[in-house]
Amino acid sequence: MSSDQPRRLTDPKAMRAVAHPTRWALLEALARQEPLTATEAAEIVGESPTNCAFHLRTLAKYGFVEETGDGQGRRRPWKRSHIGLTFDATDSGNPAADLLSTHLWTTWLEKLNRINVMRPAFDEHRRIQTEATQTVFHVTPDELAELQRELAAFTLRYRERVVDPSARPPGSEPVEFIGFTYPRQAIEP
Image 1 (cartoon, rainbow, N blue to C red):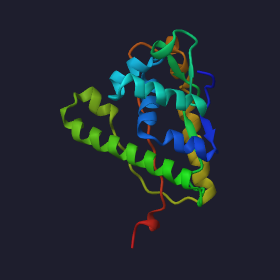
Image 2: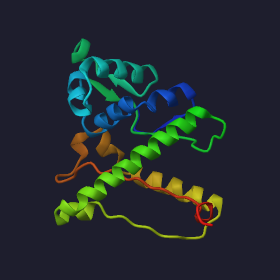
Image 3: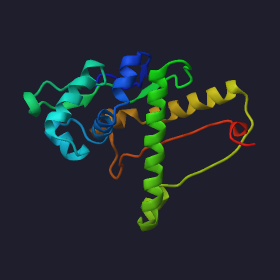
């Protein structure tokens, strides 16, 4: 991985490129296990190796993934270029930002629904890992922005474990943190 920092997206073409469902699935597959060849990725995301190779090359064109330098053709291993991504979802008037935001929210909510359906069958250890919390508090827009920055900084404390498998303590496993904030008055009558 070239960068242990999230990539800040500003280019509308890059936003549209990553909003493609297969490309997003490839990035998620690489987040769980990297490097991956197009053939290995195809088994994970349920697409053909040829299709995965095309989408990996497209992701590389926009700087989301890179080759490891080993192998050739579909046997070339790929890895992510950054630990994650950020973008300004409030960039009104930017159709690419709207497209990416809609794709991500839809993807995340689908994941949460799948976990909710599966959760009753989980053992106690797994149920504890899928805890949810909700709270309401009063903050200014500046305070909320600071809270969001603090949460991002908190998760980055573990970035070394993402980029260097040898830094992972025994028993650790990948966990996804998804956080949403919204003004209550925006949805209440």
